[in-house]
Image 1 (cartoon, rainbow, N blue to C red):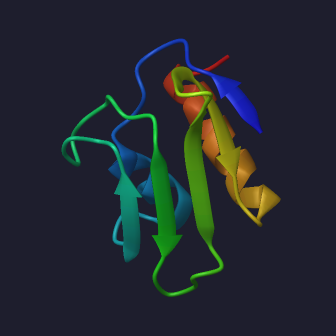
Image 2 (image 1 turned 45 degrees about the horizontal axis):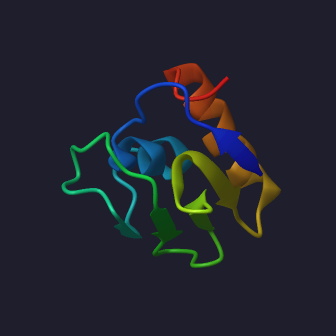
Image 3 (image 1 turned 135 degrees about the horizontal axis):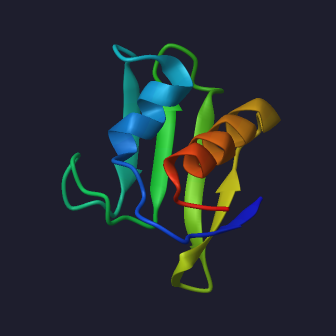
Length: 91
């Protein structure tokens, strides 16, 4: 699902926390300079206890304000979209 960024993004750790809980064990990769950074446009999160629980967020045409959210799980995609809407990052 494609999204357009209109505000600051949350720390990527908050995205993982929203998906799997505060003390979840997950692997991450992306372009954030640190876990506390709100400036990122690429993110992969994988739940280590269930590797089928994976979400990828990537820029469309290298545009950091136009991202695509992908997962085999539509539930994960919807959770991320809803969280970003609540956070004020997207409409």
